[in-house]
Image (tube, rainbow, N blue to C red; front, side):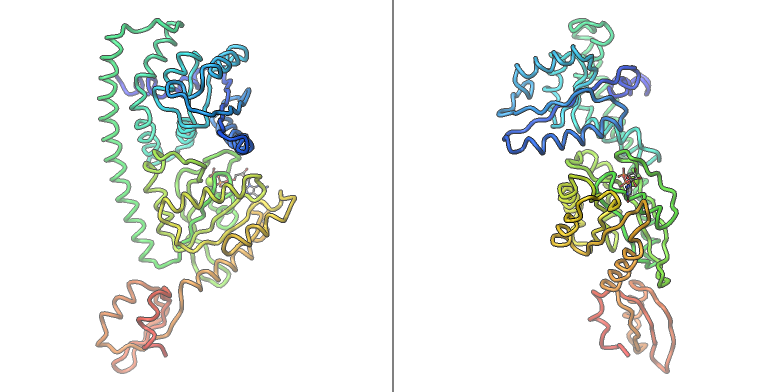
Length: 437
Ligand SMILES: Nc1nc2c(ncn2[C@@H]2O[C@H](COP(=O)(O)OP(=O)(O)OP(=O)(O)O)[C@@H](O)[C@H]2O)c(=O)[nH]1
Ligand SMILES: [Mg+2]
């Protein structure tokens, strides 16, 4: 079986690309009546994802679910109701906001008779269409293959139905089973090949990072929920020409640019992949080396689309993901973006009371950028310190270590002493304070 073939077999969303009808039905569920509002908001987000993927959302249903049915997730009455809507509105794909187990998907497809996908598969598909670089492509393929592996069986039954146009036709059982075994083997080989290719790229990335560390330039990572305006801010500050789109996950690669503050201090800015509620673990795992760039930053610029109704929730989600990446202890500047669209300014107070170093800007209209710059300078000053030291030459080991960890501004000699003007991380100040002049 050639490569294209297996893509068609496994990437069912690719089949959707081939049909003109893009009608989608979205399903959300809530357990307690008080959670209905959140469920509806989450469906809005699923709607944006489905738009970004190029589907037409025809209808959204929030189901009050008291108990998960192990075979079909939803109870049989609800499944029938969905099947009727699918028929009536000519739906080609039903998208669940919840994670659905492979066997549940299979059973639901049998009953509803169109493709059933979940939020994870939709996010994976959105990532797949936005991946531009070789690395992003490999990372997303790895996540997709791993997602598809336990679902191969479902894909076959689905495809055989597609081919024959009936629910029961298609492959003879034995033939299908054998084919699944072959496909599994092929997928397994692909997974291990891609994993090792990604490792090679990771090595290159580490090398780049080491070079950056050598340059001792404070590094700022712009992080935040997808669509918050991270790339817009990056462009506003550096003319980086990063793709900006009113779509989710426009950026899947990190872009690094040098930026010179008005006090002539150089910094590096990194644009990063956006976060989302329940960012699939497969994606976190595959994109770990990209996301890890965040953990190596000296300071995070956490961008929030404060004009969004879900700004508070998005911020909580972003912090959750930062925690998962072990980046929660890096100093944060909280930047509230899109204030040009903000009607009720009281939310700014909420952020000021609950989050560190809050400032409000409009990246699009380039407003508030001076204040952001000041905050950046302030934060650098809080983690680094310029000192003038007079160190006896016998302490050459200390001098070597200092030069390695700091930015040297000037070097001079006085008899047997070395005079260093140097910018050091504050953490090591106590080690050298005795030599300060
Ligand atoms: N009104 C307004 N819109 C903005 C502002 N900043 C960004 N946008 C818009 O928000 C949308 C998303 O902007 P991006 O810069 O692509 O957002 P991002 O955070 O990089 O998104 P991903 O890369 O997808 O995670 C675009 O349509 C921007 O034009 C702002 O200050 N005001
Ligand atoms: Mg972006």
